[in-house]
Length: 387
Image 1 (cartoon, rainbow, N blue to C red):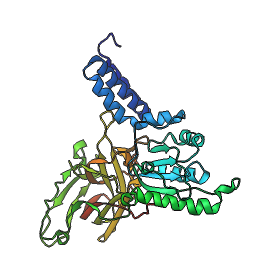
Image 2: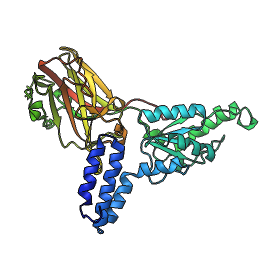
Image 3: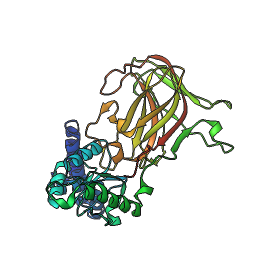
Image 4: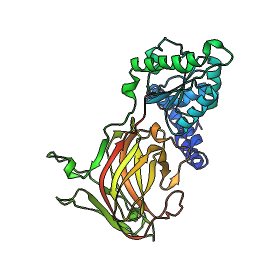
């Protein structure tokens, strides 16, 4: 391959053959392609290595944890610190948090048990460990213990073997020390306790006051791009209306979907818990989509979440980020990162399709005329405590 001088083309061919078999294997092969290309261009190689370390830092760190070494390179953002993580309850709490997409930091005083925990949870890209965090009555933890942390879960418990760690000293006094520590470290200010939403689209003119915002530009994305016959449009908003209507005709012959998107939005989901919409529908099941900014070595994909509408009735729709599924077209990408790992978003959109996921029929899709009135789209924060 090296003698042929066309290693990039050969490796690309292998990459596309493997992509359908295993996305993760393919991503590493694509990284190898860029590595070989970097070797052929020495001036580009240092930049390539530096960029690769940044992009794959968490995978490198998790690889180190699987062999019992501390996590390196990366640090959490908006993380949950689990104190007493090596216990049975602590491990269950961490597993639930990790599977929901939260960034989790395991903390404890026993380095050996922490390394065993690291091997158990090292498969998660959103997992870190922090050693030498030992809670004692009347002694605060250093502020560095809470770096990148916005919430703390205490899973510490008394020891029946050691009289120095009875219920009073652990459940009561040690937790008081933890509370005092996180207050001094400013975790309360970083915790997501609800608050102002991040507005993406708002057609409610009564809420805008005298300052009128420039309306977003919606682009059609109907099945005509692949030979279908469906079509959709946005109706101009009247002065006395607090919504804008997306309407059209869905034809299942040749495609069976209508879509509308806003491009070049560039916003960050970090610190929020989901998407909130105010809509009036027609009884159809629609999908809301967000498109993340992906690293150079990854294939593009979307996140989608379905929501039902009530015919001629206004409803509030809340779509937590855990409900979003990574897809390419309508095929689910099971190995794709969760929303919290790709918080930079470049586009949003709404879809009506005869298919839901993996070419399965949408049970609440009615072919023919449709209409969806949209008043508001925004990012919301759920109320939750710091400790």
